[in-house]
Amino acid sequence: IEDALNKLGIKAVNDGSSTGILHFSIGNDKDIHLIESYSPVNGKLIGKVKSSTKADYDKIITSATTAFKVWRDVPAPQRGEIVRQFGNKLRELKQPLGKLVSYEMGKSLQEGYGEVQEMIDICDFAVGLSRQLNGQVIPSERPGHIMREQWHPLGIVGIISAFNFPVAVWSWNTALAWICGDVCIWKPSEKAPLCGIACQNIIAEILKENNLPEGISCLVNGDYKVGEYLTTDDRIPLVSATGSTRMGRIVGKTVAERFGKSLLELGGNNAIIITPTADLKVVVPGAVFGAVGACGQRCTSTRRLIIHESVYNTVKDAIVGAYKQIKIGNPLDETNHVGPLIDTEAVNTYVKAIEKAKAEGGRILVEGGVLEGEGYESGCYVKPVIIEAENHFEIVQHETFAPILYIMKYTGELENAIALQNGVAQGLSSAIMTNDMKEAEKFLSYAGSDCGIANVNIGTSGAEIGGAFGGEKETGGGRESGSDAWKVYMRRQTNTINYSNELPLAQGIKFDL
Ligand code: UN1
Image (cartoon, rainbow, N blue to C red):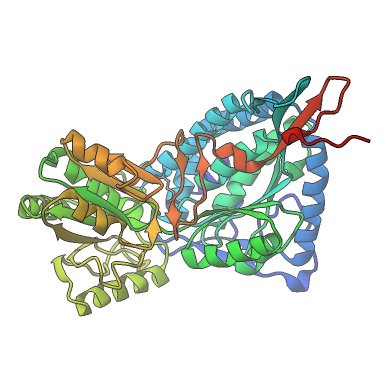
């Protein structure tokens, strides 16, 4: 990992001195608070990062404000060129950055690389988009008039991201925000601060090489208190926040109070419906990867399987059988499927959730437990669990960020499965496994899944960047990444232009003087 850190320009420190906020001075010494980043892989300290003070924040916001005035003057396709260079740098650094993601956050190395690939993909997408921030021309009801719509940069975009996708979620926001002409201030999760510094180093170098102000990309570190600097600051017109519903409720309210916009990407409680015609070859890897990938810490992780009674036992046996093959261990070893949870607090939450499910009447099909002994010294490795449960159990209604899969039966028609699937407070991702065209279309119809993402014959996780990503209900309603998600990073302006010599009023109103 030292080699990866070196390539990413991070000097690991174990001596109490600080790293981070590389581009802004450190403020008053007595205010210094260090965030320690421990790897869940082996429990070792990777480094310490200085938590931003209010004084740091004030400097940063000034730097961002000045940078915005420069950046908005740069034509959009040229902004795209900067993002293209950023994407190329990520291609070069995919190995070390993917490795750092895996080491600091604990997801498998493959998934760490996959996350960096998502960053590269969104950069490519943003480069193309930088020539397509098109508005519309709208026919006017008045003679000699024309209407049009323009998209202007918003200003400073605040980004609050979670530990589970410590680099990709930032890039989905920032790559789009940049080509839109915005500048960004990012507060990464305090559980993965080194990933934040690595990304900041990469973009800072590119900005420098292009003689652009460093304030185009700013980094602040710290916990929710630092997040509050962003949410309460009316110089920040948009705050994009990814994390728990609890966090989103506070962020949404605080930002709305000052009439800011927020883009919320919150919890999921994602289900796969498995119908009588489902193909087991697709069901098993789809469900298992969905449930145990990133150790159940994706917001798109599969939490529930809703299986038709006629195939219930067959599907259950196949999935339980597949769980026996899962190898749990050091995520940097590519023969392992599942790495650790983020920290021991997450382990406690996992343990408690299993107890609660049992107390509510859940039946354990694959036993869980915290792993001990050689290779598991960090105390963060747990066994993926399968529990037969009912949808209405309180614990099933709740998102637990851990590899716990609840399975349940539906009887009769697909409508019954859809009712279960929609019968939770969250609305992020959903899937149906079926070879029946009518069932697939019904699931995708207005009467089907109520989620932002609805898939057919693939699982709930692993979305491509080209689509808009996000969900309804307690998931927060935000959309980021592909499709026309860019529009949230811009302000829309409607123009009516009169090129006649008269001044006719709209709606035929007469106002003769
Ligand atoms: C998240 O967990 O916050 O669809 C994002 C997926 C990934 C992104 C997940 N592309 O699973």
